[in-house]
Length: 200
Image (cartoon, rainbow, N blue to C red; front, top):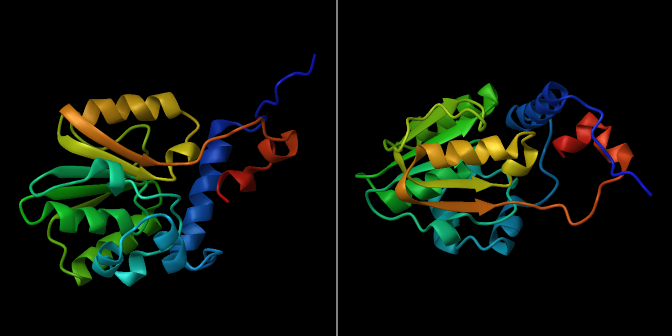
């Protein structure tokens, strides 16, 4: 009987590889391999949404449109897990308006700093970007109406902990909008043993 493949890398090695990969994207050392506008249109973002978001926040790193399910509305509080330079945060900020508020959390200080600069430059007064891990969110209990995430939870080595945190920060009756990838069959051991594969 064939044994299931198991990760030989420890969690800290995987987290560092993911963080390094996205830091390189944030600092311009690496570029996304696709046309971000074409990708976002294919993923279901509307023309209006793409016009609302600052161009410099659009890195083409998503795999869906979490707003389709979450549908933020005026006055709501939204949290984006793994916000990058703020692409989905800025879209949500337009949806919730001046009476709403959006928080973006990312583990890369470079992403957070870039997102803050974009928000300040483009005068988004209803957003806040925080450095943190999605497994241990720097957000108060029962404080958010919606949690969204775009192609980030798959990168976590502690997915159950991520969902515990989501339910901790959501208000009773809160909503989740997640776009992500799933694994249909076991990955080769050569992939599981390669730290670079966890970010790409």
